[in-house]
Amino acid sequence: MLTTRKLLIAGTLLSLLSILATTPAYAFDGRGGDNVTIQAGQVINDDLYVGATEFVLDGTVNGDVVAFAQAVTINGAITGDLITAAQTVVINGSVAGNVRMAGGILFVGEKAKIGGDVVGAGYSLELRKGSSVGRDLVVGTGQTLLAGDVARNVLASAGSLEIAGNVGGNVKAEVGEASQAQSGPPPSMFFRQSTVPVPIVKPGLTIDPAAKIKGNLDYTQDTDLTIPAGVVAGKITHSPRPVEQNQRPPEKTSQQKVADWALRSLRSLVTLLLIGLLLLWLFPIFTGAVSAQLEHKPLPSLGWGVVTYAGFFFTLMVIFFVTVIAAIVFGLLTLGGLSASIVVLGLLALLTLITAFVLTVVFLAKIVFGLSLGRWLLGRLNSPLAGHRYWPMVIGMAITVVVVALLTFPLIPGVLGWLVNLAIVLMGLGALWLWGRDKASKKPEVLAS
Image 1: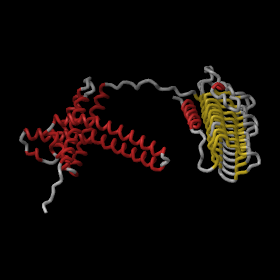
Image 2: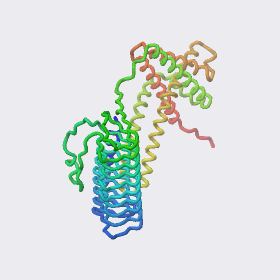
Image 3: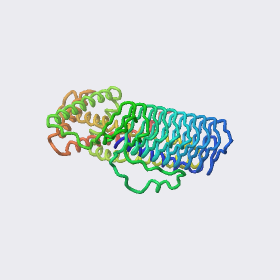
Image 4: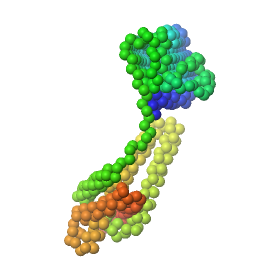
């Protein structure tokens, strides 16, 4: 997916999120309700936080304004920054700092003066002629109509972009295809509650002959445009949009497949041997006891391995649902801190359980099987190495990896190797379960008085 589409989708989702979040609510400190209006002549000497259905600023705020509503209208003055998300954002006044806005319709009127940067995301952004941005303009929209003045640079990603104003720096734009015809219902159908009209901008990049770009123009679009003479003072760079690569990579040769198979098998053997030696060195009693369970109870180990495998995923579901339900219940009881703690603990439990299970399946279960196989083979051969701490695991693990590798040889189709590997893992899991069950069922010894 192209960057333009990604930014458009992100902007639309942010707009929808703001709509869902704008039910009458009270912010940290400020104004809340259905309609919040700061009357003309009223001065607020502090940062203002607003959560409302409709917010209108006709007065002055000596600080920052953070507003979330269905409709936000700035007719007055803000000496700090404006951060807002709404279905419709209208700026007709002045903002001395930066503007960060997201919504369906973003509108900057002809009398608007913005001293800092403007960052906007949404369906439509319009800067009317007469408006001004004191620094940079960064937009990710479906369409943008830039008829106002931008003192520095413009960075735009839009399906449709029209430049009719003055840009004091560079313009870098990624736009949709100019030849693409507009289809579907008009935008006004989806924004009937907007307090400003929605312009219709032709797809792709359009530059008015009256526009002025004092820096360079770098645009990404399949079609190479004819830029009006005298509009761009700097260098013009056209780049076609990158072609989406949906083709599969070339098929590997037989030699490459065999080489990858051999390297993968060798890497698996070395890894399992190193971890197995470490386990036998640090936890010889535990590792030996689990492998003894498998050696003496191979079929029960396989059966309990299946149960353990299924039980793991069932446990994950239980932890997840308990966490969600508990968080909702405590959230409804207004115990927000406890609700957040439950969510964190639930996530930690899931992460810990998943990590332990993956390590067990990938390493421990196979090492247990290899140790059991080595002991059984050396015992059958009456070898003195059968009682050695390390050699049974080394020999059994090597045999296991080699057998599985031969069954998964790339030039031999089939799933036999996968099935054998699964059986090994399940038997190791089952042996671990039987060991744990026996440990839990043993009653502690009572010392005689």
